[in-house]
Length: 320
Image 1 (cartoon, helix red, strand yellow):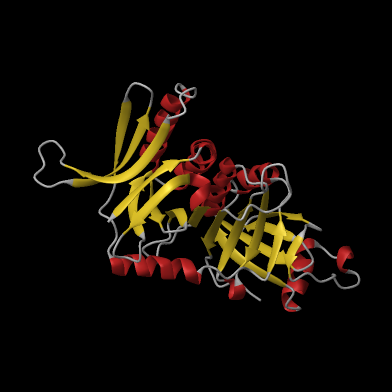
Image 2 (cartoon, helix red, strand yellow):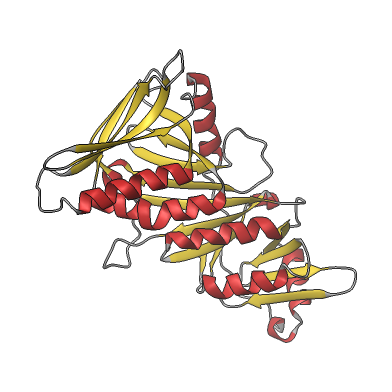
């Protein structure tokens, strides 16, 4: 089992300033999953059966790395667990040293899997090693990682990722995540369970109910990807709750309940500075999906080298 590569400048900046800070907010540990074509950071995805949000950040190999070399008995795929803060600290430190050598054309940051014998240990342990090569010396930082997953576990992990590829039939774009963040901050003081409804008309409804009070908000006429229909006559004159019930009954909306804590945590992914954010409910109310879209710099074209999404488990199977 071997892996080594050099970071690209864009790759270092993306991870250091955007994605690793977001992943740190999701949880202490993540899986790093390396394939011949992609590098992924996964939270809550494997093993299956967890009750928290799943988060997947996938990057095209050439966006993050150059001189990328990987081999294993698991179809040249390698997966292991690492502490996100240690990954971030090592990369940030390496980047700082690298910037001091920016005038040296040979300066680079290499990342590779190694085994080393810890002090006092009788058997070597695996590490992800960051080596910053400068004009006069090389600085090495070793991040401890778990034993890489077995071939069977890697196949199961890939199967879990493949099963999550189906998109909701309707996605609505939330134009201002900071506004949504403020709303959720207010609503979480009311209750722990949030009802989320998404219509094919482009409406997003959020509601918290307790025995004493019901508080909600709605975003209307949002941009829609996927199935989009016009609302029925007189729809705008109805109350928000009546509109939602009507849309669900007509099969033109889905509604689920999710943990307020889970939604608040998923909003921390805004630290990765997406260009667009879409919300959708999976078929049969299986989960609430949040998809973060990135553009190729200087354009409005989707950057297909970056895929970032969260899947929030539902507290019931919803309706629709």
